[in-house]
Image (cartoon, rainbow over all chains, first blue to last red; front, side, top):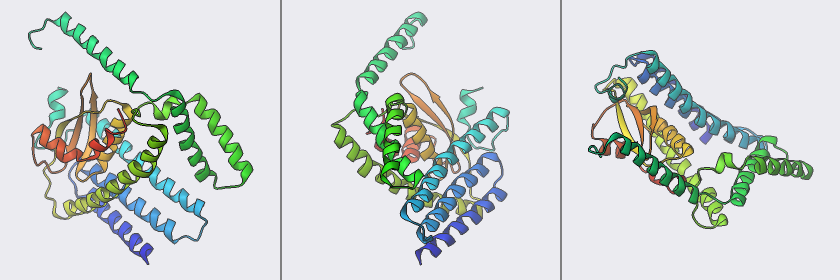
Length: 104
Length: 201
C-alpha cells in the first residue's frame, strides 16, 4: 500500500519540477526546480521500488546505494552549472547580487 | 588591522596560517584508526555492491579492501576530528550521526519539493545572491555543507570562497527575506553546521 503512495508522491514531485522549469524566468531559478525536484522525485521512486520489488535484501540495498549516489551527485552538478553560467556572463534577475560586488 | 603596514600583515597571515595548520595536525586521527575507518566503509560498500555473502567472496573482499585502505587511508578520513575512543567514534558516526543527518535531510528535501511546487504555481519569487560565513575549514565538511544547502528549501550554492581562517559561501536564494549576514546564515544553515562541526574540522 505504501509503495503506491510513494510512487504517486514521486510522480507529482516530478510534474511540479517540470512545471517549475517551464515557468521560472532565468537559469538560476530554473536550476532550483531541476535540482530539488529531480532529487526528491527520483529518490522517492527508488525507495518505492525497493519496498515493492520481491528481490533479496542485498538487491534492495543497491536501490538505496543508487538513491545515495543521486543525492550526492545532483547538487554538485547544479552547482557546477550555476557557476559556469555566471562565469560565462549570464546576468541573474535578482534584487541583490553580492557575488558581483566581490568579483567586479 | 588597518593600521598595520603591508609587509607586517603578510607576516601575520603567515604566522596565523602556521598556527591553524599545527592545530589541524594535532587534531588528526592516528594512523591505525584511519585505516580501520576506511576499511569498514570500503568493506560494507563491497558487500552491498557484490551482493554475494558466500565465505570466499567475503574473504577476497576483506583482503582487497584491507590492501586498499593500507595504501589510501588518508583519502576518506583526512578531515575527521579526533574526539574519544575509536569504538565510540565508530558507534557515534554509524548509529547516531548518519541516521540523524539522513532523517533531517529527508524532511528538508520533502519540504523543499513542496516549496518549489508552491513557487511554480504562485510565482511569488524575489531572487537574490547573498553571502554567508561558515566556521568549517576542511574540504569534506564544506562539500557536505554546500550540498546540504543546495537540497534545503529555496537555496542553491553558487560559489565557495575559501580563505585563511574564514570561509564564505555565495548562496542564490529564491525568496530573499533578510540581508543581514548572521540572520541569513542562521536561516540558511540551520543546525546542519552545528552537527557537522562535531565530526569534521
